[in-house]
Image 1 (tube, one colour):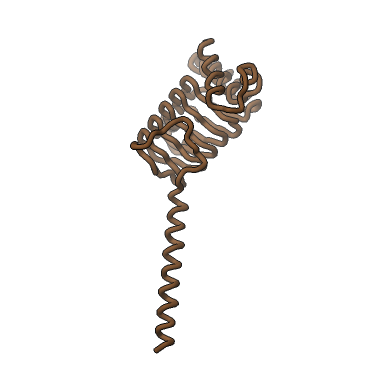
Image 2 (tube, one colour):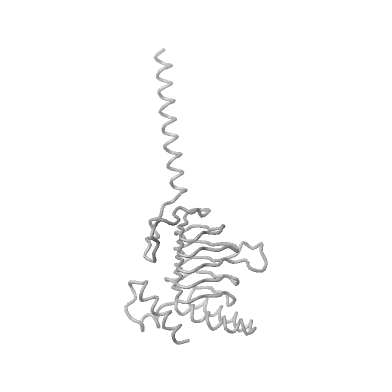
Length: 216
């Protein structure tokens, strides 16, 4: 237990340059508090003390702004950065060394029963405001870009951006925890740029045809 608590603190010191000491993380980091509250609530949930487990999770939500259902399974060294607005559903499974930024939702679509939330494998980073919805798997070492909405399974070693989420990088590129997740390629923006260039080209052709007609 104490090793797990130490890991929860150490991972913040490793990934957050603003963290200066263990005592600062212990007292001031809401993401760490939410994870510790969840570990207690999840233990009670497994013992079928459902009401008290839900009560602890709701108190934790009120205090931290992070909602983790006590039924969710969370691995070692989860880092929730800032965390306000993070939602993690009941049947969600999170592996080891995962990073989640504020505003992330790991939820369901509202239509399924049973396993209805995503499985997040090891070493995944989910950036600010991303939504991962439904019972699917996000492969190891993958990165979900800021604001992406992921509705389909993501293979390992992939980078996903856009609405709906599209894989824009897979294998062949070293993926690490220091990915600059605010400067990812955006396929939607790229498509709009292509359309704009095509419109400009067509306008130019129309103007040339008009000039030829006037010249005749």
